[in-house]
Length: 351
Ligand SMILES: C[S@@+](CC[C@H](N)C(=O)[O-])C[C@H]1O[C@@H](n2cnc3c(N)ncnc32)[C@H](O)[C@@H]1O
Image (cartoon, rainbow, N blue to C red; front, top):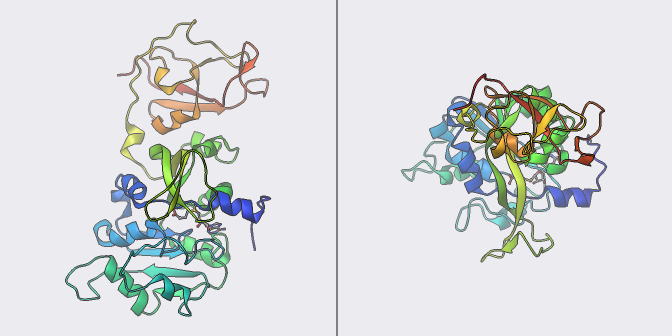
């Protein structure tokens, strides 16, 4: 099996098992609706019974005008068939059934090509999707392997897809992104903003092949029962479901969105006292994106959170992390936090 992460499986699993809630999916996806018409969508780290990505696309299949929706699940997910419940109480396929002989623990895929009122209740909704899964041949089928997104059968599904949308395992983010790029896919995926600093990811950002989506910040995710309780950023809801709040979360995409074309309003004016320059690179240090001066035409060092407001018509990205001496940027000998070096594109003042 492919995969060369040197993290142990257990710590990798721990890092990877965060489940995206529907609100987060809806809040972001509403900005991309126009991209989905006639498209084949793949969610390749998603047990359809547990994933709110699958749920969102199944619910919106007709309103988005999708051509198809495919989801594959990974065999070793510790929550497979155990915890999260997409279709909720009272639905036809119960957890017990899912654990039973019908599918066993074999990873599977679900492919949906149309959603009609198949159950004849006068409405087209998730119940129809569920009916399809349960009753129609070739909607739910077993995978040969373990559902690893890098496995040949999952890569074949990737090749068939137009747009990939998911929250992939954090520990495999580099590999996941590399695969998307290699196969020339359109995508919208959840990640940690620190991935901007990865050697493999930064060039994609700099060259405008990948950018940040609409929302970023701190978000709550469901975590498995086995998740260790924490003193902060942790809660257990009234249903006993554990939640963890993660910081620096953002979306990575190559689908165009309006936000990417909004110009950042710059209020501050340059002064040498307020904007020191680096010892080892000819740029001014701006520790908060909002403080970028409107009247400085040279290079500017900004924190990575700048990326959530980056408009490629307003700024260009020049380099990151290292100064001319190939060391981290310093001011009076003191290293700064990770910085991206940008420059204003337009002449004159910003609006
Ligand atoms: C961050 S979780 C998100 C799950 C789901 N996409 C969601 O948003 O709720 C990442 C998921 O990827 C699964 N996973 C881990 N390694 C994988 C692999 N090599 N191939 C496919 N899925 C994998 C994990 O079991 C986990 O369910």
